[in-house]
Image (tube, rainbow, N blue to C red; front, side, top):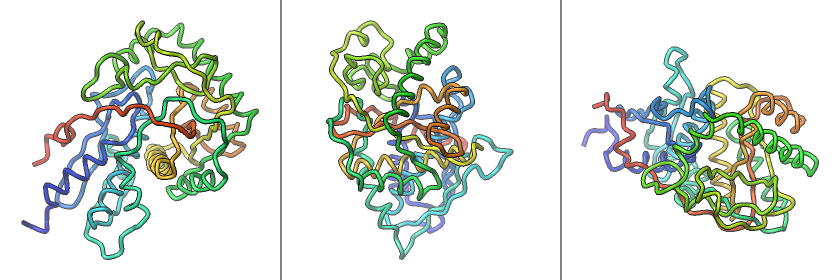
Length: 324
């Protein structure tokens, strides 16, 4: 077996870890090209969300999360990684180029987080009433900082402001059939390879607004069981100083490090991102942090059980067909 090429079994492990990353509506909008010890992470233009993600920012965040998982899996196999984010402006679909090489100085933190990849799922159910320990909050802030991002915890007035924006987005969506149709294409029903199946939606909130996103669009999904969610949710905003494509990919790396750290500490996470899908509300969310920068994710953390995971396509489907 040539040292010039990564072993096929290792490539399978690396890519299986990468595609376990979260993506908006579980669209899995990435593909990979493998040449020797270099793995390129690219956008899959066939899996865009033109109504809800017209700029592709959510796709780039998802690709960053996949890149972080690949780095963790590489460490678990005894490799180190070097990477560049959005390295060539003339190739907008190329979001990360990763060099995978054997190492004698493994990153123990990434190796540890690799074990959390199959355990991480979006927690769409209610959380316990107890606030998160301060040590957990600090650990999640540090996880974001390690990837060049900021995680800002919101106090009660800012949480209420976010919930008011949720009402605003719901009112806007009433007049936007494109967004509803797009979501219905990816969410609900039986899903065996992508999208969010009805069984993974979790319960509906018995109060409104709530710090949980109800993705249901189909009549049966809107009739699912209702339950009470926490009155004082733990919300945090993930942001970066700039908002270029590389910054959005970096936000994805930070997001996944935060999510895997939370999983390791027994903390669930879900997303309340609908205000970020409108430019004016996205700016308002960032102002709530009292920090300069650009908001990328609104994350709800809690203590409870995660919802059922969503399926992934076979690894072979993600390989760039133009590569040997």
